[in-house]
Structure formats: C-alpha cells, structure tokens
Image 1 (cartoon, one colour):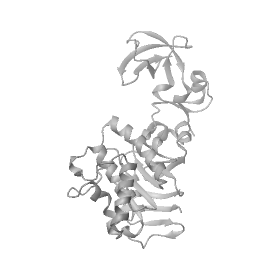
Image 2: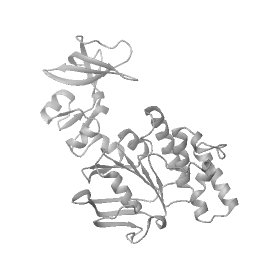
Image 3: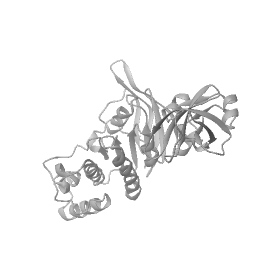
Image 4: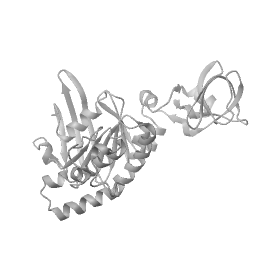
Length: 323
C-alpha cells in the first residue's frame, strides 16, 4: 500500500500555496515534510487528508484517485499541534473514539485501548481526565487515538511544536519508536530539522510551495540541494570551492555549520575570538580568521574569552557539500 502525490497544486485565491508537488510514501515508511513556516507544508498535509481541494494534480492510494473520497472515508489518522482532544471524555474515551465510530464491540475496543496506552507509555491513565494531563501526555493520547482504528496512513501536523525544547526532544525519540513499533505509514509536517531527522526514513524539504529535495536524512544533511536549503539546515557560512579547499580540504561549494570549526590545541588553524555565547552543552564562538568572521565551538569547561587567540580543527560532520 502506498500514497502518491502527482503534480499536486493548491491555490488560495491567486496565490499558489503548493505547486506541482510529486511525492510518494511506501507502506511502513515515515516521511517528514520539512520547511520554514509559510512554505505550504501544512496545506499539503491538509490536502492529503481531504480538508483542502487541489487546483490540479492527484492524491492517490494504491493507484486509486482519492478526489471523490471524503475525509472520513480515506482511512487516514490525523494528529495536530494541539492534539484536539475531547475535554469532556477521559483518556480511554478519547482513544476509543474512532473505534466507537466504527462500531467495534466493547471487548475488542477495551483491548485495543489498553494495548495503545501501553504502547504510548500511559498504562493506568485510562480513567484520567485529559485536562489533568501535561502537554506531552496529551500528545501521547492524541497519537493513541489516531492509531486506534489502524489507519492506513498517519498524518501529523507539527505534533511536538507546542512543547518546550527538552520535552520535544524526548517525545521525538519516543514518537520515532512508537511509529516503528506500530508499523505506521506516516507523513509528518515539521519546521524543526532535528525532529525531522529523528522521526523520518526520508525527508522532503519544502520551500515556497515546492519540494526542493527528497532523501534519507543523512544524505539531505550532508548534501543539501542548494544554498537556501543549506542555510535552512544550519549552514551559517557558504564557501566557494577554492576557499573551501583552503579551509576544510574539500574542493566544492560547502556550507559550514557552527560545529565545523572546533577549538583544538593541536589544530592547524589560527583565529581570534571575538565573542562567545554559552549553550547547554557547548560554547558558541565568533572568531576572526583570515580577515573573515566564522562560527566555531568550544567545550563548556574553560572556554576561551573574547580577545584570546586559539587554534581550530575541522570537524567534517559540520561540513555540508552543496548540490
């Protein structure tokens, strides 16, 4: 079973929110639709769900065009940013909602609810009011509710963006595990590349209504399709081939992330520290090198101060070859 989008275009008045998108998702595959706010990724997901009507192109499942199929008959599960749980129902009532709509008998329904609550780490929460849960717990309930009727495709629209950073990172790891354990086929919309690369088998980068690159996370991370994609993926500095050859030993147009240059007493590159900012697990530096300013990183313990002269080494994990 598979989803296929072919030439999909969506208009809001004269504006093309989505333009000629081609994308496929195989059975059991998780694809992340990654892009900045306003690029059209949520519109694309809503069109797949049947909530928006395309101006051109097709959404098909196993070769069957879904144009005439309403939302509730597509067999897709949806999880939104705020979960959209029913506040008057307890946890079990929320998870069982889709099963009740399908008239699943009580015994099978209770068994499925218990199975899913264990899967999402909420065993013993069946009788809790959803209004008493934390944000992360509510999103787990929303995921369990979406999975309950065995959807053939799971659609997740920024499912973690309302959570704080630490909780978002933990829940992304949990969600990746849950999707694999459930064998789910899923399309995940996100603006966070860490989240996309944690969750997805493949990443589709979207910009200005178009998909500009599709590939495995490591491939997209190390070889962004163009300069704009490289910058979106954290490359603050782009070097021409000759400059890249001199600095990092790669004769190609490259993007440097902040981690590409690291303070190393044995490093071959001399630089002056202009500024520093402490982060959670490292110190971010601005350094002057050969008349130009670059980002670099240093350990949290005894980092250099502005005005210090340091030596740097290249960490190729922070170097992206563009194109």
